[in-house]
Image (tube, rainbow, N blue to C red; front, side):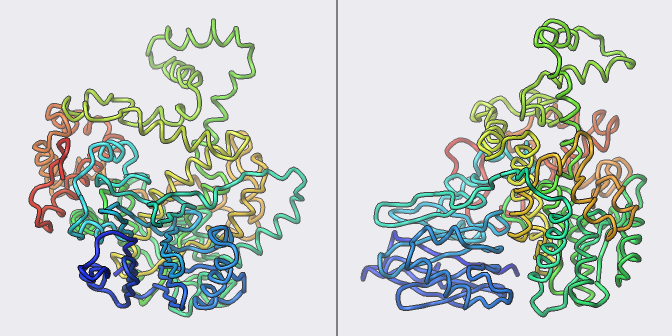
Amino acid sequence: MMPEVWGQFGGATGSDGALAPQWLAAAADRSVAIGAYGLAAAGAGTFWLEREDFAVAGVGRVRCGGSDGYSATEELESFLAAFRRSGYLACRDLRGSYALLLLDRRSGTGLALVDRLGTWPLYYTETAGGLLVATALGKLTAHSAAKAGPDPQAILNYLYFHVVPSPRTIYREMHRLQPGQGLRFDAHGGSIWNYWRPQYTEDPNLSWSETRAEFRNRLYTGVERSLDGRPIGAFLSGGTDSSTVTGMLREVTGERPRTFSIGFDAEGYDETGYAQTAARHFDADHQQYYVTPADVVAAIPIIAAGYDQPFGNASVIPAYYCAKLARQSGIDILLGGDGGDELFGGNARYAKQWVFTLPEHLPRGVQRHLLWPLGHRLPAWPGVRKLRSYLQQAQLPMPERLESYNLLIRIGLDRILQPDFLAELDTGRPLEMIREVYWSAQAQSMVNRMLARDLKFTLADDDLVKVRGACALAGVDTAFPLLDDDIVALSLRLPAAWKVSRTKLRPFFKAALQDFLPRAVIGKQKHGFGLPFGIWLTQQPALRELAGDSLETLRSRAIVRPQFLDELMSHRLHAYPAYYGTLVWTLMMLEQWFQTRERGSKRGGMSVASGAS
């Protein structure tokens, strides 16, 4: 069970003016009610502190004192002392990975916070005169006063991103705090504010050698802070990030690190060789498991039921089986290498965007009158198709150019979605969300704006949700050492060219670790635990039957055009299984999520029609 905290800030109370206890205390290990305010917590991994003037509850590890050791009570006492002096400004000094709820008995106000990178979720919804907040969305939907109808716009966002990005959730009138955000509630209502945002300062005076030493020290500290005395292991895909965490785990503990990896019997997808190389290099006690199509069939309903919202990233399957392998081996906490790409420039699309900027060095007249018209006039012949595509993409502005390969954009929403469903939507909203993050980033370079985009949509909304959820389903806790606040702070100071230099990815990261990581790992192309779902879908009857049945049921929800579903499962999938398999997976997991909620709901079928509740 994942640890949970929840609370009520104001709103409906009993006849005596006290908080109604049923929802608050149900399944709670601890709870406290103060008039119309209350907090509750359940499960290992929560923290709790009550004082005469404050009550605090949360999940994860919050830091405020800056000491090398960790004591939740000491850190919370330090935070409360700062809060008494400075009020909400004290939130700026918080560090760690956490979601936190606070009741101020003095002023009768409530506070909810998530950490700087959103490694833990916090959801909230308005009720009559108050707010409900919780780390689990299901806790909110279980409240009798909550409205829990699916949101058509959130479904579009899900189909676009394969997840439901914050601040929206799959439900109308329920929201999720974004990274570095806080929610204040008092007699005047609730308000959201950003207590932290990444600032890409790009210090031009950094010394490469001194920064390298500082980086190595911060990696060590990041892993050291992840230890809590329980049996610990690490995901090991064989990439630079998981290998770095593995190596640092050995240095910190002085023992053989225990590592876990996933393989696939599918050409181009099995990367266990790299994981084995890293394991040998660091003398790890390494285990691996080969995921089969039957495993995928078995895991799909588990994933659909276990996630608060539809989750369409297929790599959740290998993450889940990797965590299960670790749990079966006696591991209580797994370290993930997530965040390295988004902090230090590891995604291939970053280098690709530099290639598209080359025409910008030509005179504007040449661009406008020669190159851009040429991109539309060239025929789509095999010999010139790539040049035509290049010119068409190069003239797109950022960040639109990053989205040019999105399946919904390439196919067209009007070909995919039912007209009545489409009419309810703000079809430009997904791209507008990306523009907002990209252009509001406190950064000067294209590279850092792309990283800011991915910190939000790739890391906080997707990868962290995936790993934390998969580990929770397997009964394992998780930590992300590369997201340690000191490592993040260092990455924000690095010049953009130290992250992406033309087409070279992560030059600083790789150079700083060239004597630490195996050469094969440093030169490896990024892949991770990718799932060969599309390939298997065309080969494995049981998997195809599950997907086909799911999409058949999805027809009745009036979301996707039936003729498009037929077209997708016939010639599109067979022509390009890896490409269109992604869309099949996304649609299948949406329907699977609907079905699990309907089976467990007392409200009957889940309608997505306008005004549904």
